[in-house]
Length: 465
Image (cartoon, helix red, strand yellow):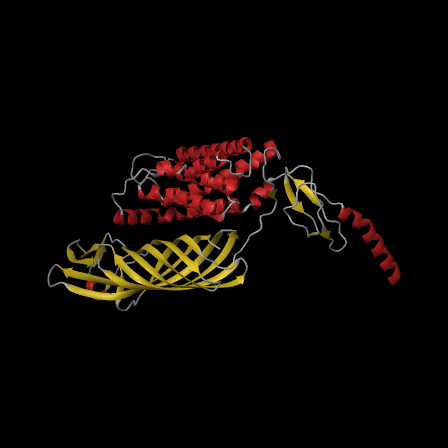
């Protein structure tokens, strides 16, 4: 019986061997290539028509076929997933809009610059310029024009239908068409187009394009033209529109005009040194001695721009700029018989640098830690303590001098694509806060102490492997 099994295996192998040896690429480079059950042993840069050699696995004949993209592929695209993630995050962040605007009004109330009107088109201009200079892209002029036109058309249609369907008032009170941000949607559409056509050249092409788009979105908030949620949803709309634009282009044109073959599956290439730059948002919770202090305001949101350069897989150095709203605390005895009238949270700006650590749990899953030190500065804050009849009892004022700060943090990063990762983090901050309580009757008293806010948030990392 064993001999019959051996003879059967030999016969099957003899039938499959000629097929394996004669496997060739299609005569055209159009379409998307998917690999079968074989292992590719020949260089993937082989010329069209040259033989491809495989080592068969379990005597299954390997295949090399072309396939057209489907809506299933659209949903599996990492860019699509990021786009819908941004839309969902933007909806959730509507609760942080007022706090974000408060930070802007405290630190940059007179910010008025129009460069975002032009910066939104920078990635698109770059793409066309590179194509005009003869730099090879993913698509021909015709295919690129169709994909760009469809992507932009879908984005504009979505933005304007939602804008005038919802009718949200802009933060500057000018018009009722704030949600979502059209400038940001255009910027991320342009960035996605450049990424799709030229991202294969270098990761810096994609990083530069999405950086320009991110600056455009932040500038819309700084110019007091949009809320935070407007910008985040606009970014998601831009990315999704581009993915749909290319999907429709593939359905309309098939493989015509495709200069470079595109792989059906996008492998994630992970480098050795996880250097990064990132933008993050967090919720600040305050840890304090409830027996000594009384919290008179709630904590708020914060934002972090962070970056680190790693010398190896485990160790690097970097820094962070952090701005956020924190709960206002006063000594319990200062508010006896009174309450704070219209309390405002305390805004703090900090710059820190220090040591970053990384441990790769898996190629795409990293555990991180950091130890930073620097300086922080509170924005001027004045809160009034009033009695039961709204009579003024005391005034609380915060010092705006620079003070020492320190941060200990831990994070968990998931690498989404070659140069894109999402990171969840928890940071414990050590921040000094000096304030003066001046009662209407009596002398002023000064208080000093360190606060202990715990920041929990999420960041988008541009990986610089």
